[in-house]
Image (tube, rainbow, N blue to C red; front, side, top):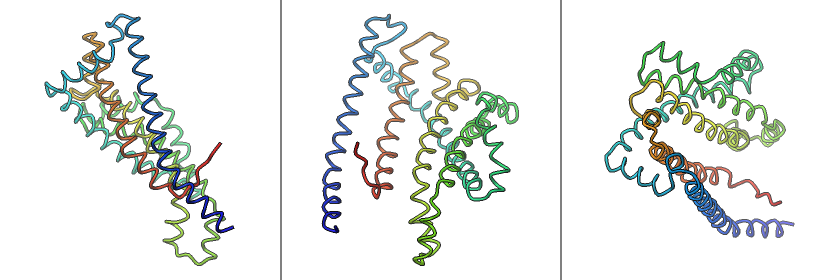
Length: 270
């Protein structure tokens, strides 16, 4: 039996590099297909409405050469990172409190759900009226909009902890630290990763909205400016630049981190 388990483990390890290359191949093919569809649509529709990939890349290069891309991009990233960090701290704390303590759940679950349903525009307007048209108000509005979705993911993750595994670790006299690190955290980490991905998506959308309404720099501001000038190539260019950045975060940071944290999980084959 032990020999069979060892053979399956070795086979799983040997398959991982092949599966990784297979994933890269499929992603590359999907990107090429998307570019081909984009190019085909741009040939069927006027470039005034759907500029082609080459026109968009040239617009990105123009903004990069002038320095506008880097300045506005940096302003957006600073707001995003600050807001995301604040939203994660508040959201994780609220989710753990609701998951571990019944009174905490009874006190906070209603307000977290209310916070999730209120439109982000309301948070933006209230923050600007409270603090003025500045970065403090922008960060407050973005984190305020984002933290309920993070709290709900963490809340569900803590509630889903299998208490039987914790009790078994206690029977084997594992220390509290070992039970937390080896039993509790591995069960919560998938929900934390989901909260991170979802939070990043919400932060990006709200940041653009905040910059569009009340800031004089950032990608959202430039998208609004391009809209007013009816410059669709620039709209596509600013959108593409940030899309590439988010893809880099996903493939360069989140995916490797996920593989490292969850390497203990068996692969599911269907």
